[in-house]
Amino acid sequence: MTQLAIQAKQLSRNFASLKAIQSLDLEVEKGSIYGFLGPNGCGKTTAIRLLTGLLKPSSGDINVLGYSLPKDAEKLRLNIGYMTQKFSLYDDLTVKENLNFLAKIYGLSAKVQNKRVNELLAIYGLDQKANQLAGSMSGGQRQRLALAGAIIHQPELLFLDEPTSAVDPENRRDFWEQLFDLSDQGTTILVSTHYMDEAERCHKLAILEAGIKRADGSPQQLMNNMNANVVEIVADNLRQLKQELLSFPQVISAAQLGARLRVLVNNTITEPKAFLMQHPMINNNDELTLVRPSLEDVFVTCTGEGRQ
Ligand SMILES: Nc1ncnc2c1ncn2[C@@H]1O[C@H](COP(=O)(O)OP(=O)(O)OP(=O)(O)O)[C@@H](O)[C@H]1O
Image (cartoon, rainbow, N blue to C red; front, side, top):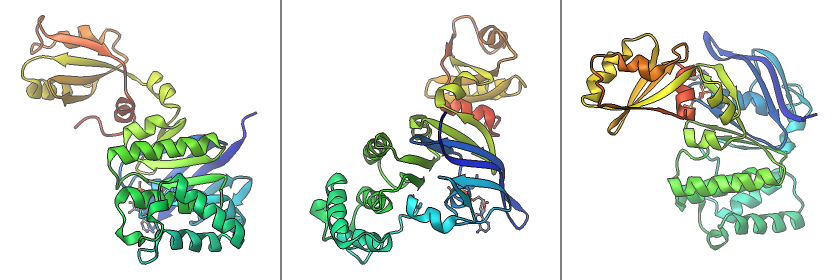
């Protein structure tokens, strides 16, 4: 039987009349990397704060690592790590002082603290920067320090809220390698993102929109279960063609990618290429190819992002 690190049932949180999270059901398996994918304001941070016990739900049940929240939030605290969007670092402390400070907060003994801090400085390539003020470091270095701080006490479960928003693609790639290392060592990771490529790296993910879970599963399951087929068209006058195609109710979205138009056609249409060929703006010389769906296509089909 799969063991769950996180289970939430019918979880909701309102801020006055705003429904930030609505009836969220969630299951995160131990040892997995689980993603929350969604645009700004969809409720990712609110969901994470509920699951860490920092915020009380308006209704619903939460169980994290066997603790019932919000009742057992204090007991849960030592078993989780939380890297916030703003990387909660002390800019006027050095790299090493930041880690030592966090080690003390988590109650590490002096001997363990020294060993753990040196180990983390080495793992995250910060040993040469140990005495530099955190405030003077680059985005990538700050991110690595924030991660080191979040796992100083070797938590079983790690929450990361948009951890790569402030770093370049190379640092993002390296950061994900570090997450896979932690996952291999048994840490369960819940990470929020608005990047499709990051979501694709997760074992499973939930797509959130306006506080509602629109879909969940592994990236492959989500792509297999999509309710649309994807056709790429190479033709003249793609901008006008796009507008024309969007007037068909069967066309979920059309997006220009350089010289191609990527069109999502509802799968109630069994022959999507033949269906599109009927349009007077498409002629026999134009190239129409049925292509594999991407996670972005899934996102577009299950949220309101499509028809614009
Ligand atoms: N403490 C609060 N008081 C009132 N409204 C809040 C509070 N916290 C969040 N919200 C609102 O709840 C909604 C969800 O916000 P949340 O920060 O969870 O989204 P998000 O997906 O994490 O977005 P972002 O990536 O921009 O942080 C937003 O409309 C936000 O304004």
